[in-house]
Length: 276
Image (cartoon, rainbow, N blue to C red; front, side):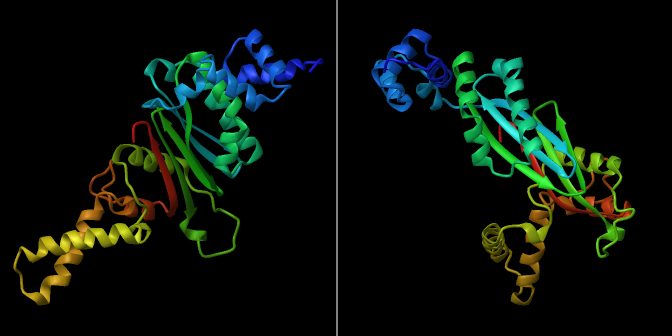
């Protein structure tokens, strides 16, 4: 290969973090085949990025972005708290957020593929594993996103109760202060499900089996058995279902009561926390 493209060498360096001379040598040897060049560099023990990939990532940050009716929540992870607080790590995540909301990206695999070279470049620069771990998007008129100290993030999708059953486009926005308070509740209380209907069937079935066995030990009359099991299931799930949780700002109300008082319906939510 007589004419060596500097862009190919640069691409190999970006993916591996290997020095320019070693990259140039392998590009010449493999006639411009980057995959073969990476394979050869790994055999020689020069490349380190593959080794870093298997290292566990316990630290990281949560980021969120919104543009119009499109909102995303992102978790990127690293190995140490030091890197999670670095400017380069934050910028990497922020670049993903900006790109995602600009292009209304809905495909997580595409996001990971698009930023793979940047990820490997950062991985080699900070000398530890970096992962684009989770990504979620919501589309809607009433979306609120909230991130607490880059450690916990929430997106809420809501609807105005007065217009939920109509085609009217007027007056259908929800008070953002109300959504902020519910977001803070979700941050603090960590609900797993929106309502009882959203609990997966397998999870519900497993809980029913547990509560049935516990109820048998009570030795109550058979005619009360199903009622007792049903009550136990409801009580068990009430603390992890958003709508039935006691509102963190006013424990006398449930989130459902607080929402109805403010004429809103929570349609969906997502919560990411580092370390989950």
